[in-house]
Length: 492
Image 1: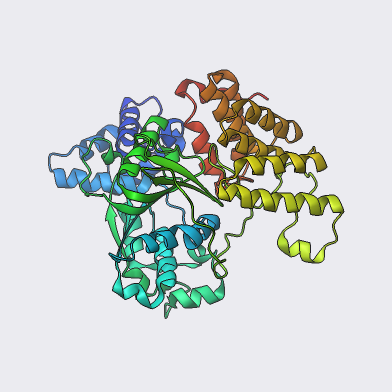
Image 2 (image 1 turned 60 degrees about the vertical axis):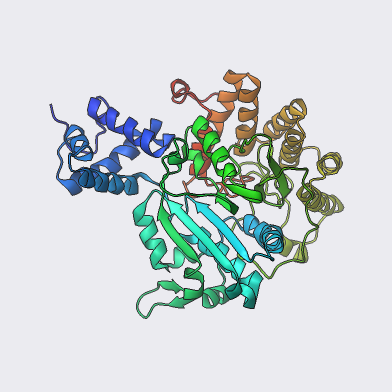
């Protein structure tokens, strides 16, 4: 019997299951492995648009003997199923690192040749590469026109790229910008509340459709190599872990010597014959393709006021120390860590002052790569407040970055003893346990992280998650679970 186009998922229809597996295989989006309702809703829209009555009929369209017709429909389907939430200067800590350290280093290194090459992989509607263009132009100033600058943004979703090429955005995409920055970078459209990115920034970026999985079988139609900087943050969390690891390594291979790769907090690190080295910078997971030991330049002067994302929840990534201003997990209310604004007006006890000072120092030291001293300060902070789950969490991530897995595990468990709803502590402990071979316990903690994330709105930021949304954390945790374990009940 032909399944109807009702909201009910045709889970037992072999054609639906075949279509699902082909979508995942083609796009890498293992995110849909256990999300049949979400996938079916998107497939239904294409069935309705094409007048097809069943998944089997739709498969015939995708495999149409007119290859152009089939390719066009695959493109339309990929546009439906990909996820493209983004906005200008998302991940403010990453852009602070770009402005202070990474782009100045690239400019210094390439000053003789005056050539820069940058790739934003999985750029969605273009906010990320355009944001990089803005920062780079501000750093170079009047010199910009004398440089050969190529910034390329790629995505599998052609509809997203059409929006990117137009450079027209609404207020939602500009929500991290101040009114002054909006006036500086954009031109208000005569009608409505949309704005057009100024041509000097649009002209710096080229957009092309590209599937990251094509890097694995060398079928990529684009010849990417010798990049000074590649950005691929929280794109691969929707992929199967083995594919994500391989893609990250392929990205690393496309860097020039001394080039930079920026990833997300939940993304795997690249592996490239020992050439890729992790670089601890405040608020970002950074790697460089280096032939020799790396020395980081001392921090540059503070940049002009940078856009704010509206959240202060920045964490430390697994095996990647991320300096940040901590924020307590939302479910429990330990002694608060005030914002700079609150510090200016609210009286604090000596202990609160001391804890805040420690965390600022931990942030600075971790950013310089002085992990031993940063961890020593964690211990000092815990002596002043031994029941602060956020400090225990930082202690664990720094210990893990120092390859002290046993101590990291103990610190994560202490954080969770104090706050059972600490999603990132569950995630980090789960990944650590799975990696150490204690899969059953690791899966329980990963499932806990997923359950906590799913209680939040998909776009809500996870405390201490380095900018990860609830949906992104859930997808990242899912990658570490075998399909057979994904639907088990959560136990604490």
